[in-house]
Image (spheres, rainbow, N blue to C red):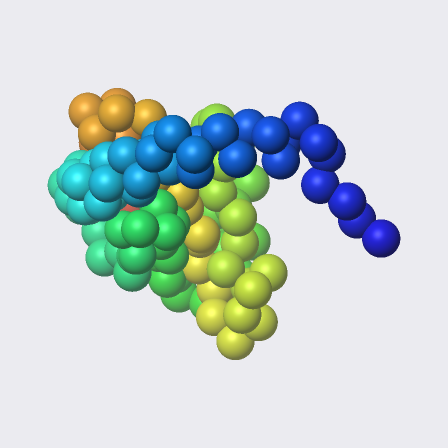
Length: 121
């Protein structure tokens, strides 16, 4: 079976024991909507997203569009995944917007949006 390493258990215990986990969750509740708003402003496209999951989906015109755009996005440095990997009835992109400040998220989302709009023309 899978056992959690002792070091990870000790670190998590320290987070809980000293209240750091609660502070982390409180900070995420504030930052998550701001990051989602920044992503939406930057991408200028319809994104179905959950702020607290820090992920969203961009639906495309079918599986063929996903197969064309996915490698282009990845070649441009975006860590996107194909929506069909999770739902084989729809083509699209699964995007994340977690690990950066809102300003950088907006900048990168604008770059992704431009790539998507350019590919659709």
